[in-house]
Length: 81
Image (cartoon, rainbow, N blue to C red; front, side):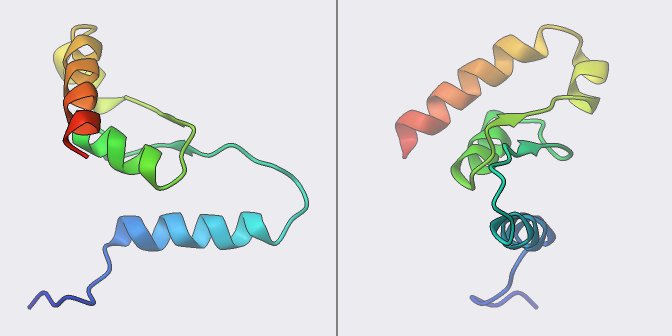
């Protein structure tokens, strides 16, 4: 049963990475990898601090046209905020 305080595995991974990186004096850019197949996914990763996203499975399934779709969806997700 989901509750208001539920935390997704994605949030746990992102928060763990941020905590680990914040313990160092080195600036590290984070690239979101895995689970990015829509513009909404990309926007969520970028909002959480990723500097870039990697597109793998969606590229293999859809081919290079995936980038046009993702760009359109990302633009829509950004204007919806």
